[in-house]
Length: 322
Image (cartoon, rainbow, N blue to C red; front, side, top):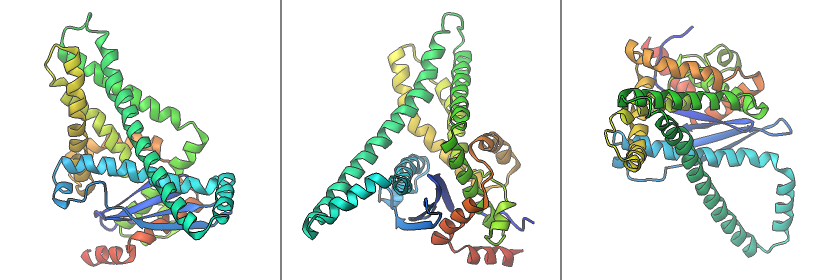
């Protein structure tokens, strides 16, 4: 039974055969290794910007949070994937064993720099890909209809429909991949753990199993809100120059991301009927991006939560309020 709904402040992400959970600056990655043992790594990530005033400013914090999520997501994915690169790991260990302590220390620094550079490049490319496919491509496709549609309002709506179609189709198509199906199952385990403790229940496999796999603070909901809000913002662009239209769209993307983050943040803390209604499309889409996990996956998610969050204290506080 749900005792009380409350905002815990923890968030997470599914990774390869595992789950990452984050609580403030502390995060943990739990991975089910090939030998079926669970490995848990705990670390800290303070973000690309250290200025707390800037990180707490509405709209701006949404942009920074999105970038931080990308960086941390790549970092945790790289970590989880490392357990399944046995051949490369053996070669690396053999090579390191042949080095002197000084050479090993120097090599580790070089490897860290290469990893950070590769991660940064991947994040940049991912953002460019997303902007190109989900923001610019719909504009160029809709521009072909300018000969037949004179209303800028209708063209803006058409661009939005095309954007939503591309996004939902992309999410649906990748869900057919076997590896992605397992990631979506771990995604479901992550949500179910958070919903379990925010409902005031003890964090056990049995309680997690019967909790919902949908959550209003999910990144899937955030991306869908971005798609909807972009329709409203891009419809306000009233210029004739095609180049200027593209430039203004690019400049508005950080603002759209910031506004979308504020809505997701509000939705995660509010049970207002209107906010719940606006959250519904994101929850519906999560039926694709999350799957029901098995008990082994739930155990991994629980380990990740327990490494960064005192859920027993949190649940006790909820029960005292009842």
